[in-house]
Image (tube, rainbow, N blue to C red; front, side, top):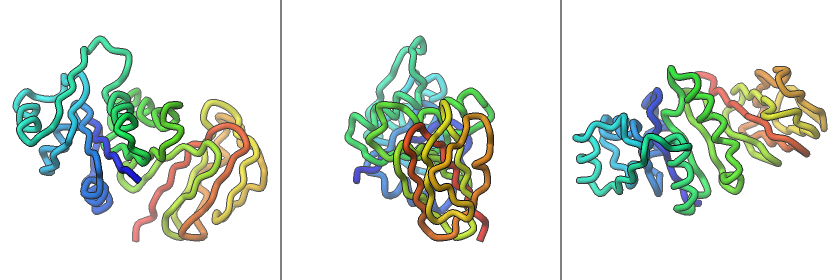
Length: 214
């Protein structure tokens, strides 16, 4: 597996998991203002991408001096900086991609970054968003959910009803049922094993795993 980690410009809580993800990354990408997280923690991305309106010139120069490719775009573009970073990771051949710093006080940006998990171009990769104690991923057909017994797992339909849902390793099982769009029936299920399996026949689920404090 080729792991790419993308640093966006939202809130980033420094945890052992975050440190491990950055350390293991085969490709580290700063999406514009994610560059500030990078220099704050002494991380040196291989790529800085975006319109760079949130990256001070001295930070841009510092990253370039440490070997980063700087790929600037016009502010008058259709893609967000994080979307550009995701496409760059896919073009690099990453089959596992983690978004960090993708949630913040801009609800529009936060939702846009969550929806990027369902990007059609990323359907062949494992894409997740990690924020604090939570990990978000999209389930298109079948996925394993890793955690600790007692962790919360919420399953929310994306874009319409999700049919034929089957689960193993969750306290409240689904055996071929449908979760209707916009009805939060799938909130706050619970892991009963370190690995749960969720499969769907049609539609997409947003899975949100909340790690319970030790």
